[in-house]
Length: 133
Length: 133
Image (cartoon, rainbow over all chains, first blue to last red; front, side):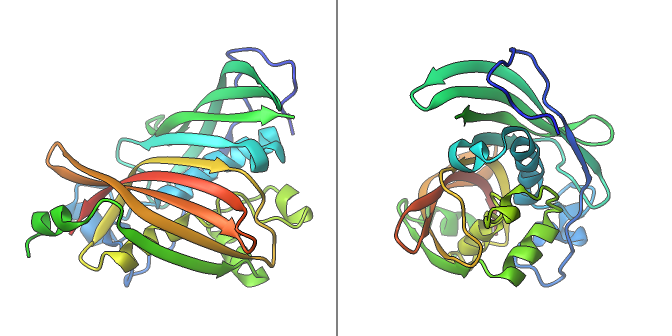
């Protein structure tokens, strides 16, 4: 597993993480965007995978790279775009180093992050950062 | 009351209540499985995977806003400050901090804070979601 080091260059792409998106469909869910019928009426391809689940795929990629630093110094800010993800989509989390700035506790590494599906459509975009102690 | 009237009636500052959760083995395993978290690091150190409690945030909104039918994340910001220890009890507190209408859709902005039993802040969240009745 490739981990962040204190020598890191702008533009470096960190190891990506691919998963087959999945969320059990509960017909009794309060949030009906997670049911096929409502989601299709809403213009989606089917029951949407929850945003927190998609976010967790990106967070795991960041944890893999930053290790326990992420638990103490991780920040992420994302937007959900496009048509989201449905069960069976193959989604890949990506991150690319955008900045390295010194802070009191260590260098804060900022990355552009995104999650894209099997047709390379981005469904999550944003920024994440973590201090390397 | 109609949909727009209900949305307009939501007060800025509305308390979403406090949700209490014990991070016992079953709870952590269920949530870890749900997001397909593979990284072993957190569990080996006695920590829950970062972010496994975030899906609870939407449930708190549904509890507090019985008219709400759908909540779709538009934006999510998460700051990780301390680990959530396996077996510990955590508390999530939330409130509505803003709301607006954009392109005919209602958006609600919430702040949530996750703390441990000593009141230590573990995670800060700032989330914007489409609100539909």
